[in-house]
View (tube, one colour):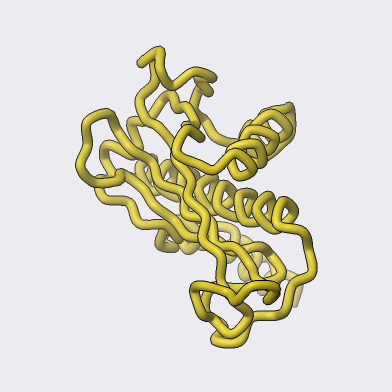
Length: 181
């Protein structure tokens, strides 16, 4: 009895990493080889509205600390995208969605955000990586989202966190898949 449990436990430990590595990334990676070679990144908020850019910069300054989300990326953070000493540029875009899934909420209607995180190499015509995320209290597939009373800044930060969390997981998956070859 004990021996069979040990055998089952050992088998599970052997096959679990394979099963995890076999999971597909949540984001779309257009060039997995180039994605796996990323060593440095910057985050460009120049195309965002002032409040969105502020939320993104606040997120970055908070989550770059030790044991925070961005510290889990194996890449070096470059604070100034204009310097050109980075491999890729991360850009975000936000859209508002009404609770019934309509893109444009009516004036005064409750809404939620979607965050779109895209990673670009210089002079590339296509994003190297892209993922869509929603605040954790909503999902991307539900036809009837929950009504959310959180302020826009809270929803945006939550959606940003979700997008970067998916990026971190995808980087780990690609790294694990590459080390298995």
